[in-house]
Length: 176
Length: 286
View (cartoon, rainbow over the protein chains, first blue to last red):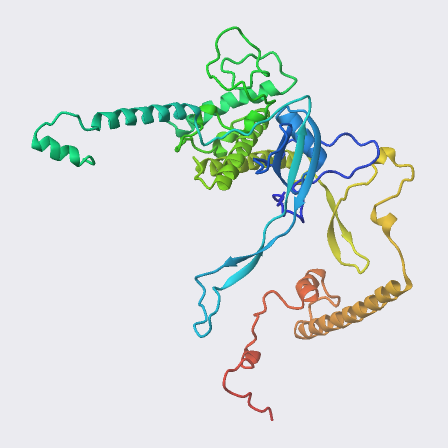
């Protein structure tokens, strides 16, 4: 049995048996669908979640996925496809024509199509996208650092007494 | 210390998490609860990890890492699951592990996408490769087991049987059985799918077959004539041999009839070798 290859847009990742009226429910034991939660740049309602989803998936697949694997109830699913987009891939290692002002050699390529799922959560759920690159504890530490630095600056300030010439010299160069 | 020990305890906790999520198993009470407050059952004692209660989420938290790991630049992770390790697990365990790995992969994908959007380096990018490798190995193991089972039960790796058939032109081919659109117990009109049911006759095909058979018989006749002359020559030298050609001697020339060349014959014949000449012409035969 050969490994089933998925070519997005041409070969589906899953092969189900043919459907007839009264067939039992389709089941997937090993789903090969990987989704990414995306943060929308625009301001969206708190109900709203956005996923990047493989092109094989349907609305019902998405609903079942979230229901069974992540235990989230979903009110509405809308999928919008991102179709083939052609772009230039530069190939700077190819020999460039020296005679003219030729551009760097390039090759036309396509991106693989995928879908964006716009999902609204049910039962008055709210979702806020957290920042996985920032730790709340670090913020407190940062504040402490600034406080410490302020304290150091105050200590470095010149005293009002005359002092020796040496100390005057030192104090003038407040960099050191 | 086996480096996979680092990965396994993390996965064990996540396995418990996934078990908690499934509706069937509701009696398990894990010691370390990593879920949102609304999903947890309060035991009365303090939880090991504190998390924000301001965001109310139903399981979508699993798209993100442990809140302790937020902001870290380096995240240590264990080895990927190898095929040898996975072969020791039962299918049930492998099924659970698949979903654990799936959730981990989704989490890493979201992190990757966020880092691309914010133009920042992703902490621990090797985790993605490891998860992908272990998922691939898992699938290999499951496929191995399925193929072995099918070979024992059906004799074929996919469990789909087949048979040798002849196409209308007489050539043999191996036909693999296809799926019925409507299963047999629901069919109202039973249509046969054996060669006897599918055979059809057209006058063109019949004429073609007859002509081919005529050609073949002619050739056979010629071949028998050659064999008879050869035997005649041998018998002329030894009068004690029987008049009728013996069967064992006829069978010696079976390869010649089937393939056109005798097995003991050299592929290149001496007097024809010189036809393959380089830079010289064949001498004219006077």
